[in-house]
Image 1 (tube, helix red, strand yellow):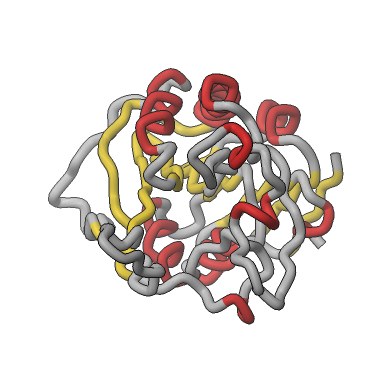
Image 2 (cartoon, rainbow, N blue to C red; image 1 turned 60 degrees about the horizontal axis):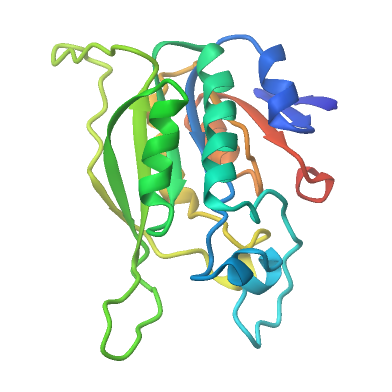
Length: 234
């Protein structure tokens, strides 16, 4: 495990299962965990991430990332474990938001609940520029499964309350601007980090390209990020 502090960011290199129990309380968990998806068959699922998430003929190569080859049962168990650990260090009522694709949407909602969170709903990320297929629906949506660490008050008189939409329409970052094959648009995370108030702490146990951290710092939040790959942390 390696720890670095850069301004309002506290960054860890290592496995989140080992690091989460060592952290102090956080105010929100916003993360894009490995989906272990990317195909219809067991063989598809076991492919390297460079083959699952990068189209043929793509000129820019993205570094592999780990944790994306589990079968669905072991993936749900693993998700439940780290979610449980994250909730232990989350303040009462803290928000937790998990990205998912359509294949893992049911499993992600199961994992959120078995990990101990109260499942509150699903928001939609409309990717706008998803590739069309003949005689099919365009696969334009990914999902944000969200819940809370126990009860959370809804106070309409709270002057600092934020009112987020249920659908976010942002194009995926162009390949030439990405450093990670599944990188999310910064504008999308700019919205989500508002679920923590000014100077509160946002946790991302799967930091990847660091988009959540960039958005958090820009919005005046503190950030704790964990990343297993030294390549992406550096």
